[in-house]
Image (cartoon, rainbow, N blue to C red):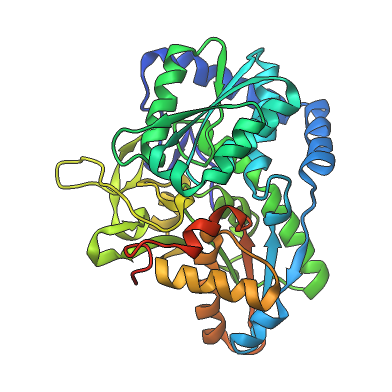
Length: 398
């Protein structure tokens, strides 16, 4: 059995590596979160928003044409793309917005890469009448211009970050600086299972609704559990969300799929667990991409949401104890899986879960007819049309 974290640690990973000015806010958040978990009224309110606003439960979908294409193994998709705003990110944003109001904080800030988390936070700010600022790298704003427009229409201030690699890492750094300055009035909604304790645990608990629903749905449809559960991993919230429900099922294999970009050997990738080593980034000890002197390395992926040099500490622990098998899929294969799913199923996946779909196809061929695979389809691909139609030469490379 996988043990729960102790004092914000998953084995050696996790912790709170933050300025002293943030310790009070983290302690307050941890206390409020534990109170809310035990508060039946809060849980009832959260369940109401999940149903009426997010659109839960999301369906389990039998991808029959993909299954046939890959040799007959049964592939099911957990349809998080059908959540309001188009991805799993709203599960976390709604819960944290409720906590912010419980703490009396009227301003939300967030970081975003693919824009889906930024859209989710802007959405809950509009829903609950809160101020909102979203930090986003210049490069990601270019790749995800539609989501930038969505955030602005929702009333959020989109703060462009032109430093460093101009992607998610730099946006996160700027959001943390804002939080340090405005900690008494502002709640920082971190978008994944990363950052200092209690965020990795709290975001996991808010996202585990994915796995809890999927497990129950799969049993009701098939009468038994899947052989393999597959999910993409950037920071890792959708993956932890679905994996958590199956961690104690020893006969269920779990596969996390990182972004290999142009290839691990090229150095142009975002696969922290496959190609990185432990270090400290954005308030937690976890696997990350770094050079010999401990400096964080630039990343590359066609998928803005996976283009991050670190990963959640629980994923690092699950890698070390070998409960989850982490692999990496490159831009070219992810792009092919995006197009294949769209043409065969009439479902346009985001580029992030397209990485998982490719790996699901590899596993399906290995299992053969009768195999059972569950894939977390974490978001839809409308946001990725520009990247798909006009990938740069480096993005299209194998």
